[in-house]
Length: 254
Image (cartoon, rainbow, N blue to C red; front, side, top):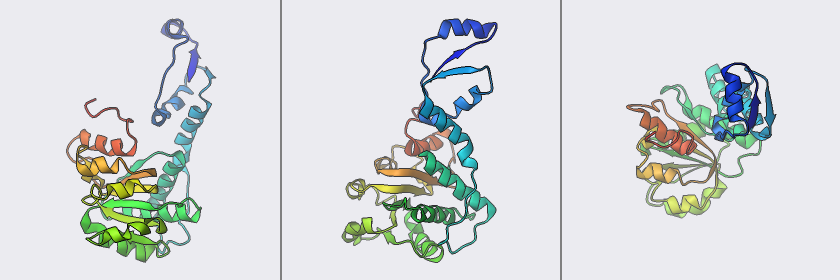
């Protein structure tokens, strides 16, 4: 977007010096444009799509949602807010980290998000959820309990390769960080509607096999679930966002 800025003093000097220059913003930085509306009047030339995205980024995340009809649970107010937030991110086509503390229902909120996507006909490809091996039974149990209408496939164990052909027939596919690099060829051949990393701090090392493999999966929306998205240093948070929205936080060193 280009702007001609009027004013006095230093602002006028900057205007004379900078007219005709272009400012480039990454799509995820578009919200910064909202602050420009509060200053001197701007004459925008082009950038309509970007400015509309900026407006939606500011307002869409505040929208209220209802729990999906097929959810066999009553969501608490903060869980409804989490659901609305994930829905808003999906509408904006960006990723994010659901960082509620342990025990506050990140799994339930995620299942509700998947159900809403299915309810509105958007779940045309499966949701792939990656987790530590120990959490496979927990996801199977919670899905059966709270979202029994979802068809869940767990890719786990030595016989999992015989199930690869069934992936597209299911709503939710579960796999582990250990198996993700091993099964990468099969998983990259399939497009997923959602790619969700549970205990996402597992990819805090961006050079790990799991982190590199996760970045290659083709999905419409990426989400991270973690009560500890930053444990030791900012580089760990960078690694999560390098998976969610590559390039948004620049390179790791910067």
